Image (cartoon, rainbow, N blue to C red; front, side, top):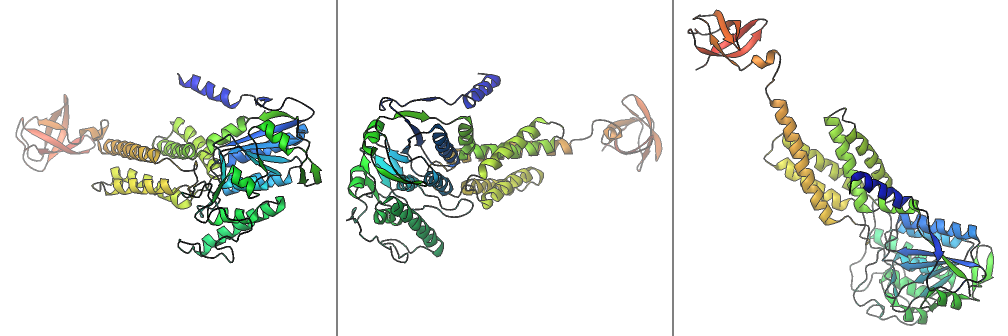
Length: 475
């Protein structure tokens, strides 16, 4: 496939119209509609854009209900909070639905489930493990989907427990059992997350104590146990079953309480449009990382070869796209600095030979910077180690090779003008002590020598002043 065809295919994919169709297996159309949005995978900036714009679209269409179907391991805290803010402000009721069977609403998904007006789960699904797993740099709290062995379903070593049971360390941010005491920064983050999810639980009348345990102890629960503990409202095997069970429930909206009339609603699914797809591609950490390197390489090559234009144009566009992606991702400046330092060291290896010290140091700095670039352990928001290794080796080879060729070209003897004569061999026309004549390339030149020269002797040109060559006998 040619590059032109590949670009045409990409443009057609991104610019495709957003299809809107009935959900397979949904209740047959009746009066009113329900809008279906899907979160499948890690929650990031693209997910926020899709869900928030979907809520606005549902309001514009006069939908009776928004169904947010989820299967997520977690995601970025900023993206999660934006989605929850949209749900709390939405004039259209939102029903979060963990489906299909085998799906999960881990970490950030648990917070969203607690914030929704109606919470439902399909059989053989789970939720929980809502402990913030990473703090720092540019991203704030980053809820992730990691779960401790044995937590899922059983609620950890202590079991799910009776409703209302005080969680370990609930008072004053106490030290968790069996673990090291967290520092002040970690305690601050955990306490903030606990207060946030308890507030959501109290707003929706759900089990706040279990929610706190999900944050402090990373406990999880199956669909059946979640209903038993009052974490979710009910289980449903399909969207149609969810609509039937939600019918008649009273929900609290910004404008006041309202009973749901969801039975018989026609379900329409809103798929991501080209903006969501483009944002999803750009905010993929691996894509953003590659764009950053392409931008840096392009600008460097443009500076090495002024006027080439193509490297500069591609590099500038790629670098701007990478910066746009990084402002939505938890990027550390230390990682960016180490990457830049590593590239500088690898270039310097060719111009200042150091027996590999600069090259090896540059490769180490490049790898460390790449692994530190994104300050998160959240699934789906990490840079591939294989990609880092491959680009490190390629960068070392490319920069060292290009810089070495440039250095050799700089040291190469001049091939034109007066400098061409320096180091050339000529033949003495006759014997002379200080001044005489020599022949070079069929030309007769005046010559000066510091030592006597014999007739026919080969001499080497060591300098030039006007039309006189300074020579010395070739020993």
